Length: 238
Ligand code: ADP
Image 1 (cartoon, protein in one colour):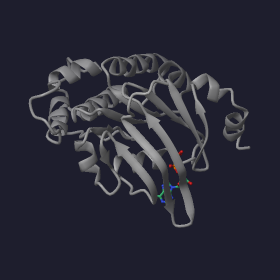
Image 2 (image 1 turned 180 degrees about the horizontal axis):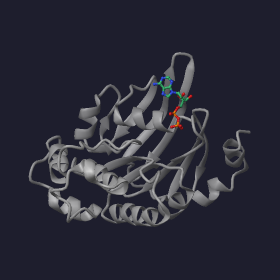
Image 3 (image 1 turned 90 degrees about the vertical axis):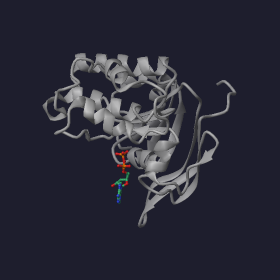
Image 4 (image 1 turned 45 degrees about the vertical axis):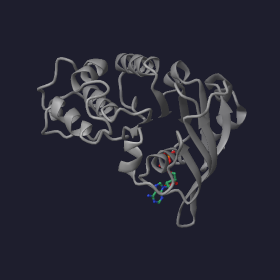
């Protein structure tokens, strides 16, 4: 791997819920422009990890550095303003507002006004260029997902966390969704994706970490980790 300074450095991060260690001593780095996959069976701590990165949850231990900044102790909106945005597993667009209004509302939270893509450019980028005036609640499921992505991009992030953004798409929508994520990477965006769709992980990720029971049990390229017997055993509940 290249030796450029990492954009994100996660070091020994843990998160406990009462006696349950949902995330246990997780460390990894993300270089600028990379797509990192976070995979692992249900309940292995993937969403909890994302929540500690985005500030939705306070880590119980460890440090998270993003660019020059230490994120520990910052609130979610402060972390978003530093350029770390996320999508949610369940779509969270505002159904009564139009597509354009949804993006405009997200842009209010952006650090720099004027700079970066306009709302219209973002909607073109995600494939909603003809739907500015459509109420978000009238969009199909994939179009709501596109809108959620446009809202995350409206923050002008350097790093985007995708929480199962491809879940629930049919095979042709999946192909479109994978192409869209590849386009974001080609524009220089850095991405961490929690994903169950292994074809997408293979197509997009330079590296993966595999979680099981809160810990990282394997790391490497998608092909390397998916061939690892420890990973196979974790998915089989072994
Ligand atoms: P994954 O995203 O890999 O499916 P999660 O991060 O959602 O895993 O969950 C990891 C573990 O932490 C699970 O055992 C889950 O039940 C538990 N957990 C997640 N969120 C909470 C919470 N807010 N309170 C208590 N336990 C939680």
